[in-house]
Amino acid sequence: MVRGLLWVAAGLAMIAGCGRPSRPGPASQGDEPVVPARLDDALVRMEAALDTARAAGLDAGGVERLYRAEAISDRLLETEARWAWLADDYSVEARVRQIQSIADRVIARVRGSARREDLDADVGTLQNRVRELREALARGGHDAPVPVARLLEALDSAGR
Image (tube, rainbow, N blue to C red; front, side):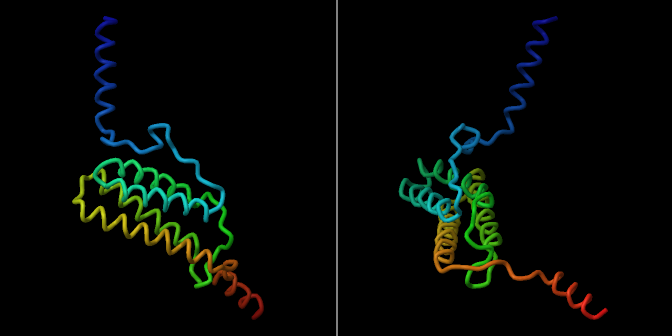
């Protein structure tokens, strides 16, 4: 009876492991990158991971660096940004979310065994977006504009 239960437990454990991706990300390997407290610094690390991935080759050791870059992107919203809005009147949070989306697409392509050209194009797009955000942060920014709802509320209360 006990031996039969052990076989059932072993079988269930094997079945549960079948749905796992063939290449786990850094977090599942206990190698999750430490993300700096400042957004600027985190973007520097992410850009370095992407540069290393391309230099190592996206078919070989570079894939692990792509996982690292994606793990960093997952934590970008937890970092401290100097401003809520960039000098070009665009939300920092919106730009970060765009970067996260592209990083997720890159990993989906890696896991889906996408064509090398498609993966390379997405990695290039991700590198460009990270670089563009770093450059935009360097140009400065400001606090978020007053939300439209608050402006309408003020107009409504002034008209009473």
